[in-house]
Image: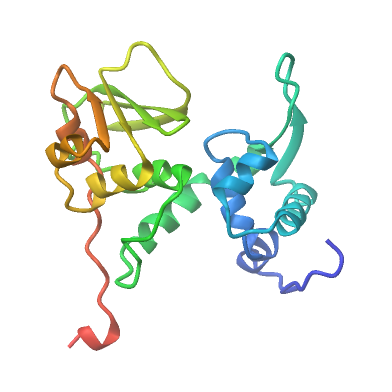
Length: 225
């Protein structure tokens, strides 16, 4: 990490920013929170970062002990990047930052959102009280990506992958699901437009979508009275 500008401060917060405060670094962590990824998948998840920049950040995060590179077992055999056990401890920090930022009155609600960002927003905004008495496994099909969302006893679990035992399945692009969750897009309208496909024999999806309410926006200084 020679040549990087550092705070050179004994404060642990400052040291944490030395480790993950460079531009794109925390977004690399975000992209790996739901499991390992190949370099090409990371680039797809962070399209604003050039290949050289992403390579540099991965090298720095590896040297810091946050990320490691390994080869998958045959027959895949590809190289992937993943968080170390210590790096994975950043998950509550990332999701809490996401929840805090979701209160920003200047957040662009109409901007495109990546698949992993959208799925992690479920962790950030999950309301255990709203989920009281709701136990279900919901499968998300977001393009080529598959996720399992399991809710039980007021707790939320999310894993990358697919299952045959889902109680309901939601198939949509990330922007449509985002509009269903955080916008004002009615389920019936999305289905009618062909942007949403549901397998929902128990009628769970409508309630599921209400388990992730946006927090009250923070007031701008000139709105505070």
